[in-house]
Length: 112
Image 1 (cartoon, rainbow, N blue to C red):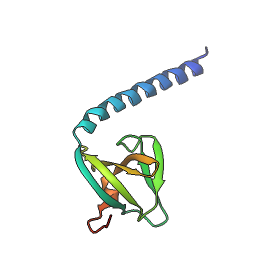
Image 2 (cartoon, rainbow, N blue to C red):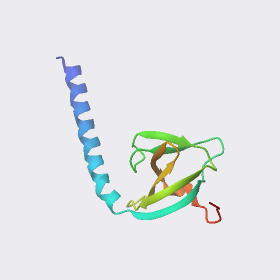
Image 3 (cartoon, rainbow, N blue to C red):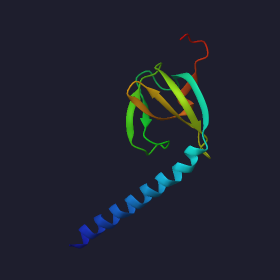
Image 4 (tube, rainbow, N blue to C red):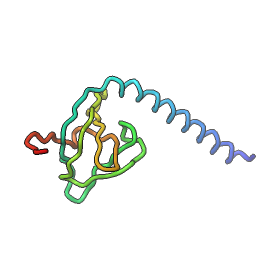
């Protein structure tokens, strides 16, 4: 193995360690979440943009979907994130994931 390959291997291992540590850091925060159980609408993004849905409540987490402005979603619960906005776990059709709460507006006048 040459030096370039060693550097790539070390960088990859460091990346995996950081990713694993971040995953464990998120776990306790999820337990401290608060129930919401309400309908919300995607707001606060440009009409030509989409809201990214993440696997975990972090902007660097894997994207699992995206929604256009105005789409309604069912918010299950949210968590408080220090020095950031809250993140909310929601469900819509086959997509379930986390979005930053600043892009959701609760819908209070909806009919079942």
